[in-house]
Image (cartoon, rainbow, N blue to C red; front, side, top):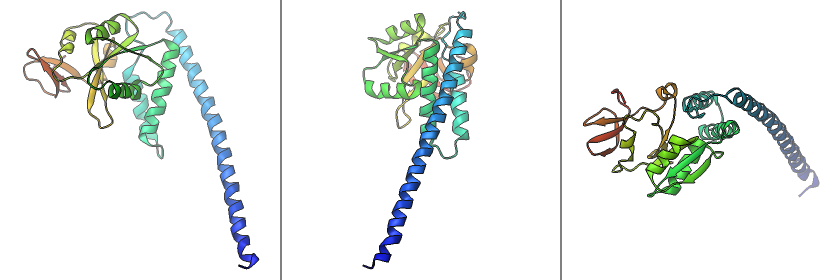
Length: 231
């Protein structure tokens, strides 16, 4: 092969390498900028923690409605970033920032598919909160009632643990945990403010028939998601 035919290929390879190095430098610069912004967000979370230091209304610091609004707003703004990436990043950021304000526990009870439920819990609550397995739904609810904690209980269509929440002025189901296919595999229970509950998924315990998606039934009661009847 003539020597002059090899020159364009060599020049093209050098040009591609230079472009690759330039893109890597751009990524390094962007990583530095992202970290700087995360540091600012962490500092703001710590300032909030200081302002709330003397708050004692008996409710969790966790604000599920606020978190959901933040994530949905950012998902709506994303143009090229996959939705799952946006949700994952901000769940982890919010989880860590909340942990800087107050240590939150996740008391989890599961017998059927614990690994699947743990995976769903981490997708929903991030990795900062301490996760502890407990021996019964009642124990999980007691932890949620008395500590800075959320009870996570596996959803069993035949289970009746949720009937203990009927008329409970302290605890409420405020979210559901879903597997990768979107199937509900667990429920989150905590001391959530009435304001936040208004913006959370609407869970109801009803006698007899009731509008909404049936999640479980026991002793004449039905646990439903959605519908218009009061809790």
